[in-house]
Image (cartoon, protein in one colour):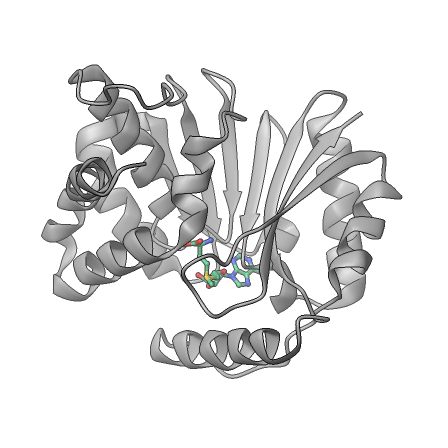
Length: 239
Ligand SMILES: C[S@@+](CC[C@H](N)C(=O)[O-])C[C@H]1O[C@@H](n2cnc3c(N)ncnc32)[C@H](O)[C@@H]1O
C-alpha cells in the first residue's frame, strides 16, 4: 500500500480512538503505522467477505479498526488500484485487560455498531463457536505450552473444515532479533499494566508442527519488515 493511501487509512482507522484519550489514540496510531501485519492482511486477500472474526487477545480492537477502516476507504472510492478489502466483516474480541476491550468498544461501536463486540475475558475459557476466522496476534506465548496445545485443539474443532486461523508468533530460533522482540514485548506489557511473567516461545518449526499435527495446512510469512524483530505470520487453513 502506497504511503499516502496508508496514511489516509491510518487517519480513518484511528480517528475513533481520539475520543477515548490521548494515550489510546497515539498507541493506535503507532501500532497501526509501524506494525507490518496490518498492511499485509490487506495486501494478501485471505479474509472472506462477511466473515465472522474472533480475535483472541484483541487489545483495543486495532485489527477491527484497521479492516473496517479499509472497508470505509473502499466505500469512499479512495482505494484506487489497491486490492479491494474484505467487506461486511464482523468482529468479536476477547481481551484479558477488560479496560482495553471497553476502550475498543467505545471507539468503534459508535461508527460500526454491533459489527464490533469486544469483551474482557481469558481466551483460555472463551467460547470459540460461531467464527469463520480466528485470529491470535502476538498472544499465544503468554500461556503455557500445554495451554497453547489446548487452544490449538479447541480452535481446530471450532472452525471446522475450511476455517481459517491466523496467528503471529515469534521464532525462538531467531537469535538476536528474537531476544530483542522478547525484551520489547516485556517492556510494552509492563507499560500497559501487565505483570512481567514468563513467556512460552517455540521455534518456528515447532509452531508449524503443532498446527500441522492438528490438520492445518500452514503458510508461514515473515512478518517483521521494518522492525528489528523475529515475527512470523502463520496462515493456517483447516483441511
Ligand atoms: C502484544 S498484545 C497484542 C494485542 C493485539 N492482538 C494486537 O495485535 O494489537 C497481547 C494482548 O494479549 C492479551 N492477553 C494475554 N493473555 C491473554 C489471555 N489469556 N486471554 C486474552 N487476552 C490475553 C494482553 O492483555 C494483550 O492485550
